[in-house]
Image 1 (cartoon, rainbow, N blue to C red):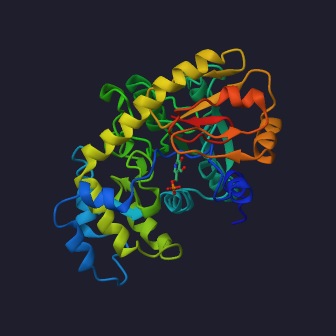
Image 2 (image 1 turned 90 degrees about the horizontal axis):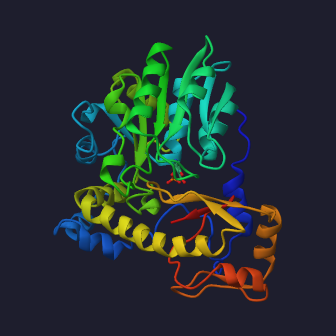
Length: 366
Ligand SMILES: Cc1ncc(COP(=O)(O)O)c(C=O)c1O
């Protein structure tokens, strides 16, 4: 498999330093270890002290898998999921689901690995493009993309980078189409639980579609990207075994300490999600004013879910802007956004108070 570089990651690596405020994260203010220990069950610290730091079960700690299975509505049992690092889950699943020459439909714009791994297999890819301007995905357009050899539809809702979500009806239509064409749906649901209104929370694809595979994890809505815990879930037990066989060549098993931390996080799920949503809520108020003030230069669609939103520059060139921001001396002050010292235009744009960071390619974390 010859895979092209993950250009967004490379961009970060090449351009970030300790004093850079990232405009490109899709995570709200990650939790500190002491915050997690405070939120988790009272014996959390003891559990960590007593932890055996050997290899762990390749499918994931059984208690952890039980806690993950309880996030779903009964169709997913402990045996129907495997712990993976979130990005690893994309590599593992797509390699097991696809072979060279398969036709794949990918929602676009897209979190890069969801596209790049399928392209590297190599598969033939059709893009299901969100409509620019409002970024809605039109299911009638999806229907037109099917071919006789379409194997897989790759979706990601709530969506990175636009922040849009499907409606319940639209998700049902996507699944109906997949069923009609005997296709698997690979559904990246890592932003699930970031819906500002619970009625907008879609069912997990692994729960509602017998050929659905859900990827999820603790990196986004749980604000714990550093523990590297995610999972793949599907009703198809044979697939879980295939994933496990492939995983022998990637991480093999999860880190023992991360599994315990993940268990704590899942036990404290409601409080952690509430923390994330309250950051989003307060930042959205600031962003409302910010975008109202700069509507002649910036356009956004206020997200109802997800932790990001895609900002379009009305006249400015994105590359020029990125270069200008990177080459100007910038400062980071706690509680402030970063302010290029010398460029008055951008000083005006980035006003005090935005607590979160802002994603690349024009996406802004809320
Ligand atoms: C849509 C989506 N899926 C998966 C991932 C992978 O998560 P991680 O970076 O924790 O592996 C990300 C990370 O940004 C993402 O945005």
